[in-house]
Amino acid sequence: MTVKDPLYPEFKIEKFQWVFPLIRSYPVNRLRFIKQLGLKAYGGQFPSANHTRYEHSIGTMYLASKLCEELYKNTEDKDLKGSVREYTPTIIVAALLHDIGHGPFSHTIDDVLKERFQKKHAHEDMTKEIVFRILKNDIEQLENSIKAEEVCQIILGEHTYHSYLNDIVHGELDVDRMDYLARDAYFTGVEYGWRAYQLIESMKISKTPVVEEEMISKFREDIEKSDIEIKEEIREAIGRIKDLWSDHVCICDESGIALAELLLVTRRTMYERVYYESSSRIAEKMIQKAIIWMLDNNKIDKDLFLNVNKYVTLDDFELFTLLKEAGGYAYEILNRIKKREIFDCYFLEKVGNYPRLKDAVAREDQKELNKLNLEIAEKFDTSPERVILDIIRRRPFEKNRVFVEVEGVPSPLEEVSNIVQSLAKSIQSDTTFGIYVDRQHVNIEKDKSNLIKQIEDILGGM
Image (cartoon, rainbow, N blue to C red; front, side, top):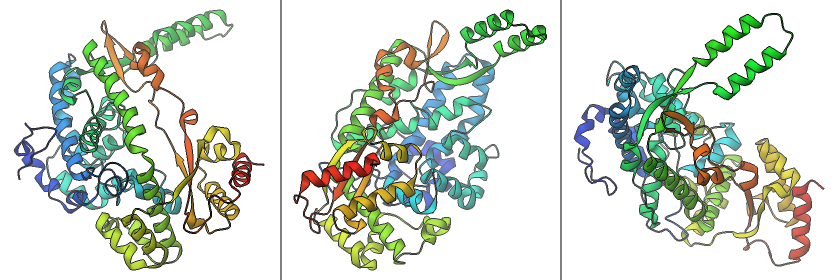
């Protein structure tokens, strides 16, 4: 095998010869036929966004290897250094397989899995099934130290013994994000000023306290003021708490902090300019409507989404074929996307302004959201397939997930960076929604002000 990657010219695939059985496996090779950015290349302003989940997965594997090298070199604690060496093969496999559960057009299929099959975590749930039911033997035959269970734990950020393992593939500044932000920016023509190598070189593993010193001091003060009879036992317990620590990937110099800030600003820019770009997003929502229509009308086998062996046969091209063969609404939607005849954005607002909608979004109540979609369609005097209620969730920076070491003391990044503080917003304040309407079947200009008022009443719960 040879690989030439536009982001990493020095990448030598020969280094990963031991993992070739997985790279060559059908579930991984299938990712060559799933576009990284869904329908971005088929509509909107990014026709060059033709890269796939396959090269992203290979790139993430490569960055994971580089990060393990730097963590081993930069970490002072001998036990943690030994841990990095022990877990490096498992980390590399987890990085390669982290997106193995994606369906056609990447995130386009996620809402279908959530809405129709109660797969709350969508492609993450499918990743777990593919690892355990299809790839387990292949994974564990690579090296004796690699266990499929730990591969899944690292992918999903659920490793309980070493927290730093979750930071590498499932963190706020993980290798997955480092690769896809740079790769997506490259193929969409968006300029970005940071480099993964430089940020990786500033990282090490540090011990971080489970309970902060200020909190322990407050516990002591409260105990001394109280009349409780077992003060001595509690003092001893608090003393033991002081020695509790966790391990996290830390940024360990000022240049690393600046690069982390730049990456997070780039991430915000990519969401606003690329990931939420309206015309391609509407096209993706149209495809989702078409798939749900096929399921509701028995035009597609639901086992394609329930049976993992059938699920891994799905890719972009297979889905196009299924849409064509289904006929009716599904075939119409496929043709309209080919002709760039997408639905119109009729309404775009913040979720927080409408109590009924806000409550449904907060509870992730898909039945209520479907009901709202139906009620809005009735106001347009059309079928639900001709109206789309789209919840656009901005992903905020999560606090206490990225650590920096300042003068030997690890602290959350948001405590030392004003830029990051401004990015750490609540989900509700940044969540918007769109209503997209098929103007070929609805007169969207007819009595528009009255229709908008009726829609606002529905969403507000009046």
